[in-house]
Image 1: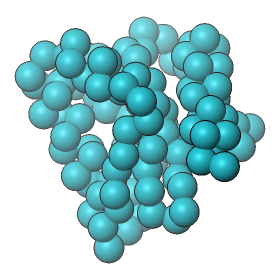
Image 2: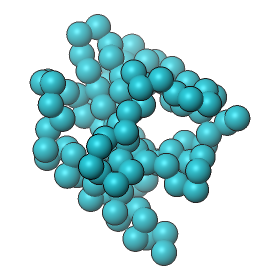
Image 3: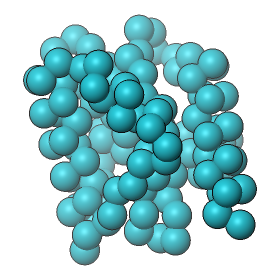
Image 4: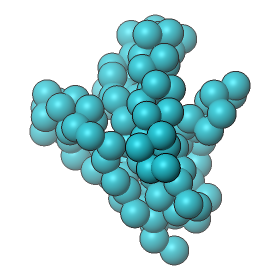
Length: 111
């Protein structure tokens, strides 16, 4: 089984380009895992409760934590939205709202 990963607009690309090479390599590793593994461990991909289908790709590098919001579309497609570096245990509300807004826009544009 292979999932296709697509990017909605360029929110994620802009985030990705700001990261150093080691973080980019780790992001690529997690993306490859999501593409190929049937049941992706929650350590790497987690559904956010109460969000109507929003997930976060989870990347840890050294002591830094990165999150990339995404959702599934038509079963196999992972759509990537905004990414950010987490500084605390809780997901920042502003980032969560942005991810939900982008997911809504994506599905609106598809209609």
